[in-house]
Image (cartoon, rainbow, N blue to C red):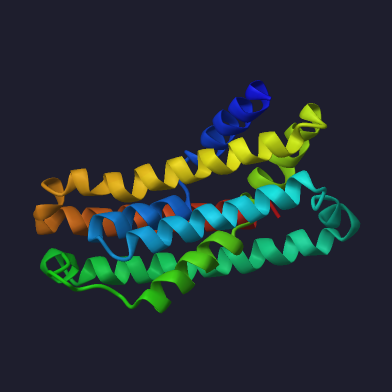
Length: 201
């Protein structure tokens, strides 16, 4: 049981730790201190649902309808391209405009809506959580749900560290120029992922 839980925990960490659209968003919210707890909870719960679906065999759906994967791919790429463009637009405003003032933050609803789209419209999320973790969990039956619980805990640990740990970079982002660099890096990350999705179609 311990082996199944630990393997699930470490496997989830290794898959989620790669810099992607969702992680870049959580990092940005952590730096801006904008609804960090809510963002972390939404990301972790979304992963838990997807991991549970994978362990329960939801991955068979994509095998039955290949068009589903294609639709998610193009929808995700489109959203990432638009979000990346918005980050470049923000960078053009300059560092003073980007650096959040005390109490300045997007609304909770808008923040969570963006977080949900970045999570659920990204085909890579389904590949990692539903397909890969679902397949690996089968090796630990009948303890596959213990594996799933370990994976969900790994996801929660990572997003908590990323969101709440980002504030340790506060001194660096006290400089307006650092915010410009962050927005450009996030924008490039979004566009790179979008391009990879399109070319992999």
